[in-house]
Image (tube, rainbow, N blue to C red):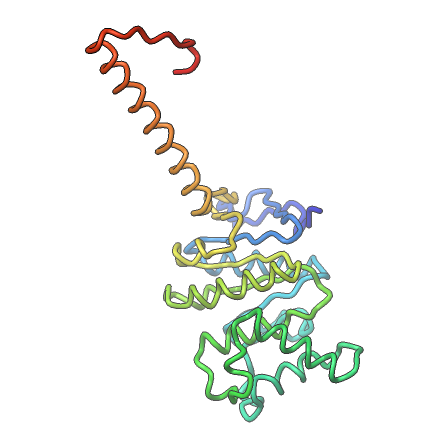
Length: 256
């Protein structure tokens, strides 16, 4: 099933066009990276998507971003883990975040255990939130939204400019996809757009979203090209050898 995140969006100021009739769609369970250095433009694009779409969650790691929208649509925007929860441990925090699940507590704890395993946080089950690293807190922040009925989760990771955060993002993407969510990851570092689990990469360029090949597809293409090159070298070597030993090679023309 294809999830249409936006209709056609045009954004311009005077004669300068920032978005030119742009729309964005995701396949169910697909992860797409939105890469680009123009962070302000991408965040405005995410803001427009969130204002149009009801069944998505936008995760923001900078408390100062989009304050006006957050104040009116707080249920759709999830900020970084608040210091108010600093005395909670990870399990207590997830139990609080999953309190909307209508099920017995024992069953809810099983859901929490599942999320801790999927997101690689099981060793932090009893760690106080104030003792988590920034990347661990960000991962927990994403895990805390993994019981929502909304099927699209947008992660604004433009606050991260260090590629060291990549393992955390990869854990989050793989875990969310395993739960059936579609993921849109916004990053300004190219290496982060190539996280494991990313199916497509889009770059806003000249007012359009230009599709880039994700690393795995580039690797598959490269491997295929290498294999074909090896086959060609083998036949070329064989043709040279058969001339030396006087053997006639008969093959169909289309085989080469």
